[in-house]
Image (cartoon, rainbow, N blue to C red; front, side, top):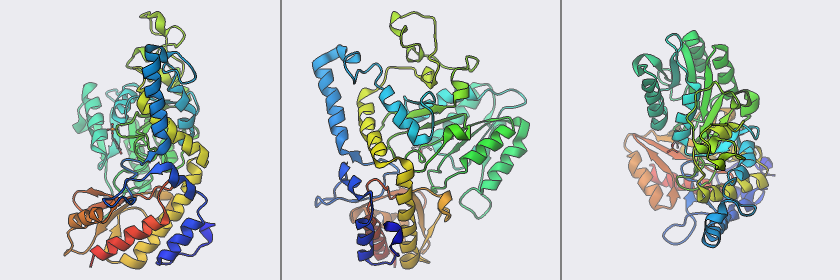
Length: 429
Ligand SMILES: *Cc1c(COP(=O)(O)O)cnc(C)c1O
């Protein structure tokens, strides 16, 4: 058992942890990008683009073959027929976020889904028109919210409220978020926050935020780009109104992969909600009668617009299958917590005073990602990042001085973590 092995800074310790890891065999299901010599890189950017599941090649090729052989008949032929293909992903994706099968749909892309859902769940009135987001939101989310506010005839200067960490802090204090919601009270229309913050890796208290927003009479949506496949969630039980996420980060769905959305059951059949419509949201049994009377599917599928991107969904199907075979996000999270603790231990033992982490130290307030800043003024952080990459470490640089690394429990080893710290230590005098 990995949790019985005491940490030390030796490589032998990392090897012991790997040998005792019950999930170690899953790494062989992935292609880890190689360095110039052909050896697997220390791939710590699964928070940006997850590694390729080997079986995705077969799943995508199967669809290319079906296209080649069946042509247009592929839409309606066999167990992999394209017309209902997205349904193959619904249950596995619902398990990733703790949703019911009528609450989760794989469709479009993340920012597009945020827009579609805000059309439904941001219904501003002169009294209640404010949207609460974080100051350090991912730019796409910020742009989406600003443009939604303008689209409804309101002004971001008065309708957009930005949550900032306290002076001298890098992450939001959970109680400050809840206080801000309560203070906005009857002016607050919508809270739109990340489940896991993309820059710092902070896990936000989603159930408490949801309760606070509902207590204020507002709706709440989460951007789960960095949460899906990283931390366990129970969106249905938490009573979240809506959520959207991408699939190319921890879910390994491939570059630009199809996105996903959650709408709580109590909203899915609500005909009063404003909605942008397309033919893929209409009843499946009458869709091809090509009538122009809209008959919505009584699930979140009624937010679908277009027929689905099958090649992207085929790759995602391969990855979600692996999540199920492993035992789900909760199983992965157990290993992840161990890997996070190990990386914490090494950074503290080897690099204390030279590196600070922006990520909250409490296990329940962090996911797989570390955001690290080099404290020494003589050291140029960007140069350290470049040399990490040259040494075969794939990580991520964020202006002005943050290196992000994310050990992913599906395919990163404890030896990966050890190598990263060893190489980093050699670069920071
Ligand atoms: C990755 C990410 C995005 C990217 O949006 P796309 O529409 O998929 O390009 C948006 N928001 C957050 C918080 C992200 O982490």
